[in-house]
Length: 128
Image (cartoon, rainbow, N blue to C red):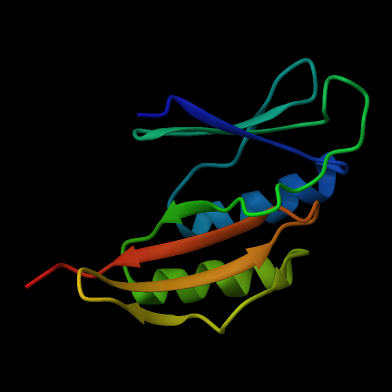
């Protein structure tokens, strides 16, 4: 459905440090920076980018927005969360853990990145 996702940043160095650390835990290589200063993380399932807003206004987080990154295990979610906290992220919502409903069981953790964007890592348990 999506080809890429781009988030704004007010501090590219802090944002790159945060995402290099958290995404490496998920097996995604370090970002490539283009001549405009934007950074891009590429995987077989898509591209994630960071940029200073091109209109010159400050970047801000979207109220009600969340960007979720897929994880392969609950342990990987925990490692993602720890890497984020160690690299400028802020813990939000409940601690990492299981969330269940009648149709799904997830292991999920939430953080705010250095710009305030709400991001999460999520492991989806197989359904019986």
